[in-house]
Length: 142
Image 1 (cartoon, rainbow, N blue to C red):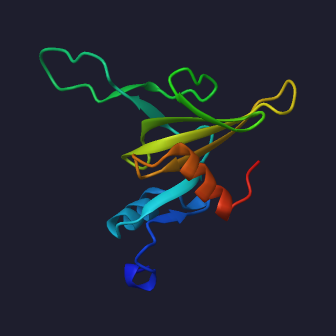
Image 2 (cartoon, helix red, strand yellow):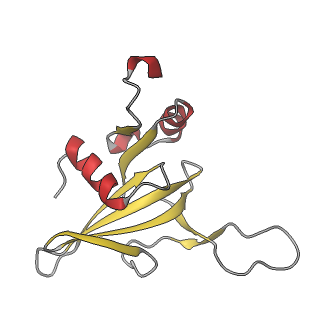
């Protein structure tokens, strides 16, 4: 795909989760486009290290592995509708080899069962609600 085939105002590609792979994402970013897509719940993600660095040796870049069952280290963004909450965090995606804006949609509408939808954007400054709405325009979720 070449960018001259797209209108100049297009900045984001909302793609299926199957396209959330290293070659596709790198190709889109090389064309100055940001990818919005869905991730599997078991994606290999790491938190960014924000603690005090040791005085000697290489700097520590990544912290512990992301556990989507525990959203304490995520920032609560909004309640999209009753029982649907958005959380966000910038994390390192090991397979994509890049930082991403991760958005977790937690669905607590069914008693006794918590559903999770994991979305991401390569635009680290993008708003979590905007990521959710762009993906929802393309694919039905919740």
